[in-house]
Image (cartoon, rainbow, N blue to C red; front, side, top):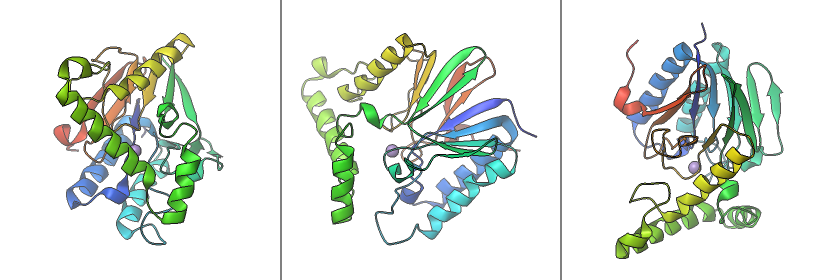
Length: 251
Ligand SMILES: [Mn+2]
């Protein structure tokens, strides 16, 4: 019996999961989805495709993917929004409505009279906007994830510069430890609001931002590497966000 919520997660990166507990948390979360959700949207970056190491997706990644693919078998619609790490799916839109869809570059959902845009968000990243194909080419050639290294290096450098000049480095998104660059996604959400969307959900930056922080119409769906971010939208179109590992689930 499907539930009443739209549940959104992003940036699972199941190929980076090291601990058994992460797999267990995810399987536990999927039980929750099965009970509470009518639709599960995975907002990009489920894992790297093609895999960074080896020729095949690892056995542990397959375990997580198979768990995820139970959702549509159990009555929960699964929508996959393609991210940058799995951009190989970009040219492969799948529409097996109502069970499974793969969409790019974004999904639009109307709930409670509100128009909701769900997008991975790499388009607003100057590292990926236009340059991604070059990075992907280099990656293919070197078998080395230039994009991830570049983003991580850039984030670290920005944080370092902010520590040097904290009075100027304060993020537009609102948290002192966030790189100023995150303001780009907030600005993009403002433009999309002006273009007629009532709620904008981005992922990509692995930095959760719930509706309680202004602006409330912009939510970042976080990640499942450093966090276990869950975003939900109820029937009235109202979003909430929480950390799965803090809430847990007992059936
Ligand atoms: Mn990601």
